Image (cartoon, rainbow, N blue to C red):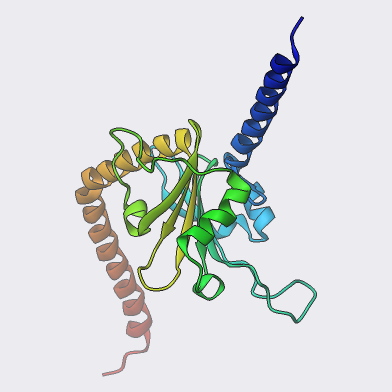
Amino acid sequence: MMNARTLATCAGLAIFSVSAGLDAQDLSQYRDFELGSGLASVSARAGVTSSEAKIIHQRPAVMQDLEWRPSRWIAGSTAASTDPVEQILFSFYNDQLFRIVVDYGHGRTEGMTGADMIEAISEVYGTPLVRMSRAAGRAVSRLEAESGSPVARWGDTEHAVVLYQTSSYGAAFRLIVTDTRLDGLARKAETQALRLDDQEAPRREIARQKKELDDGRATAAKARVANKGVFRP
């Protein structure tokens, strides 16, 4: 029979396991937007049409970005919104949301420190990781480099949440929420897409020049017919 101390230890471990599970679940989403969702679902939740998504690459995978700016006004009211989000960029890999980039407005975070932001975000994602290091062998992406200095990181083997301070003057913060598996696939697809672009550039330029020449000839032919019929010397 287990003694009281053993029972207390087991109960504590059970509570910790449940708590850890909840934190892990939270890491897969930002507000009502969940990583892995399709473009139609995300656009519906954001209140924008999916046709507003911008195609970044079409091969070897379809990669799209959808930008959303929350309303500056409270729905059904003349009062201004206090939402600190300036804009959100949703990135999709083969119709799967793999990254959410959240830019907080300067006016709504002015005066707040990195510690203030960490405290607020930790209420959603739990305790940040002690170490800020990235995965071994993983190069810094252009987006990460442009995002500024990393302030804190939350994550597990499947998700990463990183807070950046984008300016050394005043509080300008960015939060990037990522599905690590899909992000890896998207990185490889982007590298391959850029390689294909370079390989196909000469052929595309020849096709562009041919189209331009054909269009010019067609325009000239049409003008010739119109002008010849009415021309009087």
